[in-house]
Length: 134
Image 1: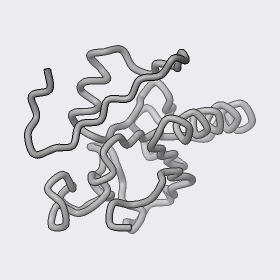
Image 2 (image 1 turned 60 degrees about the vertical axis):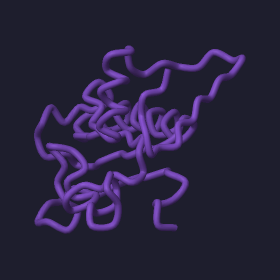
Image 3 (image 1 turned 90 degrees about the vertical axis):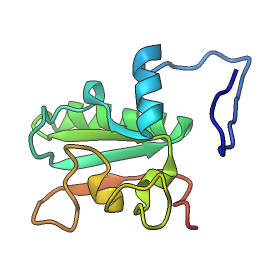
Image 4 (image 1 turned 180 degrees about the horizontal axis):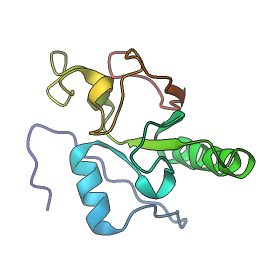
């Protein structure tokens, strides 16, 4: 039974088997946060990454993970941080939406470095369908 209030809960089922990227406990934690670094898909080991790959949605996540595999095979020295988003409102500042982070995308994860700061980190891809305000 769903226990949340003031939310729209969507339950989607399919006849096809799908990849499961997280076990149940990790998935619950990830969905509760709404956004997070997938350490198993990252190789930056907590250091400043050379690039951040971000995804939202099942197909964009599969594509982004495939791109990470290709990048790691062809550029093994490249430090990649993989971020997955399940709540697009996390990308907005908390002044615009209650799910938003204190400064929006710049604090998306505890180890996130804002693209506007003095870092060489770039977001390579954010294949989400659009920001919540669009």
